[in-house]
Image 1 (cartoon, helix red, strand yellow):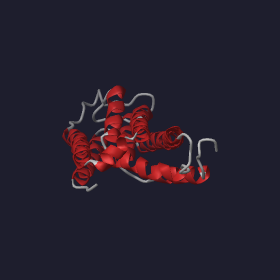
Image 2 (tube, rainbow, N blue to C red):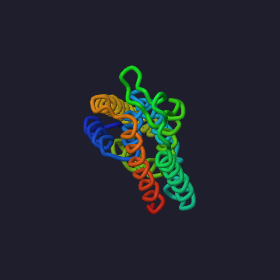
Image 3 (cartoon, rainbow, N blue to C red):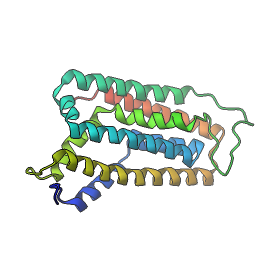
Image 4 (cartoon, helix red, strand yellow):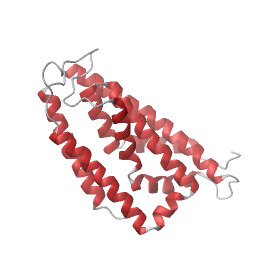
Length: 217
């Protein structure tokens, strides 16, 4: 109340619904969980959460307002984000199936057609989120609705709400990682099936990249 924040329950429910909506972030988490296990999905989720922190801080400091006002800044970030999504898609489409011995599953985790290090998966999640200008503009439009016009510390209130949104988002993302890994283990996703899954998701990421490239402010 001292920060001028209001309607917290509505903010939490709205944030959860927005996080549940499917998008590139959710698809990346599910893909990594299905092909490499829950740790890979968790790494992607943590990268996405780190990207969200950048957007929240940028919006609180007014950098997102610059992005919204500047056509060239929006276009530059948009093309960078679109190029990265297309790059991820091409990597998945062109990935070759690993040999049988290398593709063997350990600790009940799904075998992967392309086993990426967790650090690289974290960076994938981070870049796919932070290079999307629509995420920055979303925070700039959504969060201020829950801050009173006469709030004494608007930037701090923005950061607090952003942290709540990100925390709830991480809960959902990790649930998605765990549930996808469990389902893929039950279905025994591996080998050729994992390869075709990568190709299908790669095509989906290509479509996400093209959609972002063609989007308007």
